[in-house]
Length: 329
Ligand SMILES: [Zn+2]
Figure 1 (tube, rainbow, N blue to C red):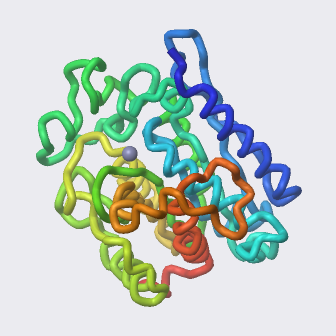
Figure 2 (figure 1 turned 30 degrees about the horizontal axis):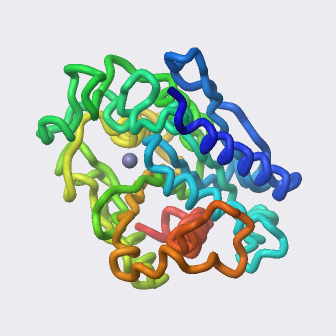
């Protein structure tokens, strides 16, 4: 059953509207298809290039959402942000994109089949964030990823699923080859926690990744410098460890294969995960559920004012792409 098909169609329509709003600044790309659902559907996985072609090649920043089909808050935060920064009449219009100072590439819905089915996993029952094949040092029995059956949640699958491969190709194409750039890539999730976490690698081990000093300075800059104090920054394994995290795989591939092949690249690919603590805001202030939408908000769908409170953070995140490696080392 495709209980979420109407919802998926609504998001896809918003993506097409964003292409329209952005004019020649936005290009729609396809990165393959989802796993086939039992109803026989394969859903296309779309990416958007936002900015000048030169900036996309030289100064790319990434944001993806919808890896887990139930976590539509992340998709809506991303679509709202894109509408906010691309509409010329918006007070959030980002001229850095038009001027070629930074490029933005996004996949708004990595797991469209999961959205259509109202599943966390993809249509084959695989949890994409447990799918990379990376073994954790130790992980919680079920939640940490399991290999028994797709009938239980957190199934790791047997090899990379089409959605995981699409995301890998996206990272390969836009980020691995770039020289002289800082390339933060944010993956938007939502959980049932009470606070917003921003995680850096690793998910699978408590051993710090080699870019920990860079991540720590970035966290300090965003939290203290830019006053994004509601976010708790740290390596993901500080919260919990899991098998099969895709960013562990992509990051290790970059550190072990891409960087050594080009030692003077002066670049860093820096994946981060934002886990929105979905209920925190509402618990603090239940009236937020019912309050009217923000002043500029072209989307009809945003019932939660919560969605729009991520705009400033995402803007500052994208602007990190203007910095250089030496700014953080
Ligand atoms: Zn998630």
